[in-house]
Amino acid sequence: MPLTEKVLTETRMSTSNSEDNAPDRISNLPDELLHHVMSYLTAQEAVRTCVLSRRWQNVWSSMMFLHANAAKSSSITSFKKFLDNVLLYRNPVPLKGLWISAACDNSDDSLDYSDIHRWVRHVLRSNTREVGIFVRCGSKLLSIDGYPFAFTSVHLSKLVLFKFIIDDCFSKKLSSGCPVLKDLVLISCGIDVTMFSSTTLKSFDIHNAEDIEHLPKQIEYLVIEMPNLVTLHIEEIPRRNIHLVDLSSVKEATIYFFEHSFRNSAVDCNILSALSNATSLKLICDSVYDEVSKVLMRDLPRCKAFDNLKRLKLGEWFLRNGCYPLLFLLRYSPHIEKLRLQLTKLGAEEYEKFPTAAAAIDPPCKEAARTFHCEKLTEIEIVYPQGDKRVHIIVRILIANISPLPEIKIKPCPKSRLSW
Image 1 (cartoon, helix red, strand yellow):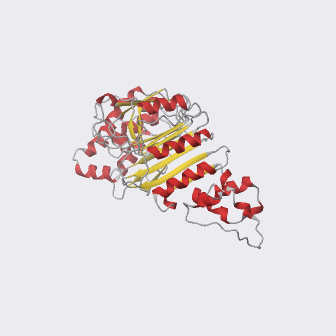
Image 2 (cartoon, rainbow, N blue to C red):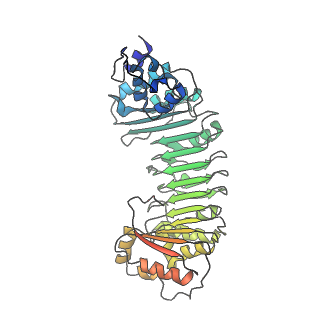
Image 3 (cartoon, one colour):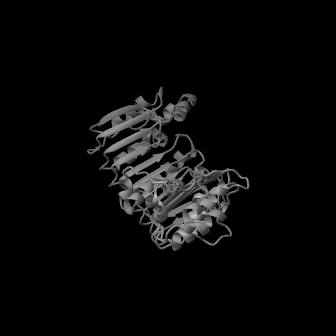
């Protein structure tokens, strides 16, 4: 069977030898440009170009970037056969990246790590620099237990994983087996790790970590030690006490907390005090009354001056004790230029519900305010839900403490809470 027919078997298209006599300027482009065009297509779409003309028959086989999407195949079984054939029959040229996307149930016609493992090993032998695996099989998380460690490469610089179990063994082997890994993104993964340690990572993202049932007590803390990290993004890791160590190189840090971020309010975590060199800092939580704000307040006394900080975004926790966290950070950030305060509907409802809420935000017997200068602060933005009565209190506290007062913009909540 010809090469094109072997690969096209699973794409639901047949080969054709017909050629149109009309001018075909695209086909006159060099392979490098055609491969660039193909990089915007899924692997299935790219392979189907082989039926356009003789010129296109084997262009796909030298593609340097593959995005294989199971949604473009009739079933998971046909998708497996298709990707097996693509990797088997493509030309032996370096592969810049492989991204796998699939959604399946827990039936026999589904993807497991046993399928993905061989693909990863194959592409890493082709000097792949980027690997992304997005596989959703119901609530199941993919586990590499029982398989040889596939993520070992002197070329891999970016790894994105979705719905994987990440344990200490995985973390240690990744650090030692990928000496040039710079970007690591973990999305909806189970973080069964006590420490992430790396001297190579420049960017580290954890998004919406899955809650692991019966989490052992010995992994109560999650230590992140990355001396060369530049960008850190942590979003909603349940029931883990985050402890940041040696992050002096971090320039942009974003941490989203939620009500189950810590095991309890008595924990002692190093978070703010480890990010004193950041130029952009976002610390978001939805309530001023939950455990998160208590933990962050405990960390404040360890903080030194934030000499490089230019942009600051804070969630509800900044309201504690008469906006003490907000005023503390402003006082010790001499070069801050832009401040954004994010209020939430939950916080507004709590303010209406609890009789002591007003006193917590604006204590009636507090000491007289001592004004301080934020000479480079040019803009303050307060984002609030409609009807939030706390806005005027915040403005009054800012007026009493900051001199000169910059422009204050008051805006309703945007659709996306992640926007700056």
